[in-house]
Length: 94
Image (cartoon, rainbow, N blue to C red; front, side, top):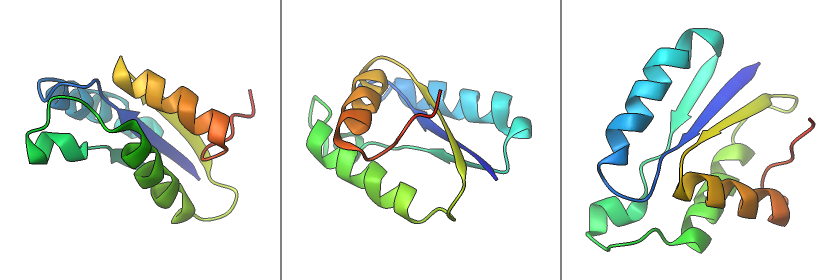
């Protein structure tokens, strides 16, 4: 199974970018998860990287063993991706 995780940038305006990316690349994946950051709902200015990394870890734990995970990230989403790799929340294979 191929699963796409879309991690937009920090600001709420990046939500539409995430939706567009999921729509554009969706046909190549069995499932897609477009992240909606918590701070978008609470009105805080910046992403809480620790919280979002934990939410990402929890999401990945729900996927079947052997799922190929592909991350498409922009801006703060890229930073979140690096932190998630460093902590072992996601593990790139190439």
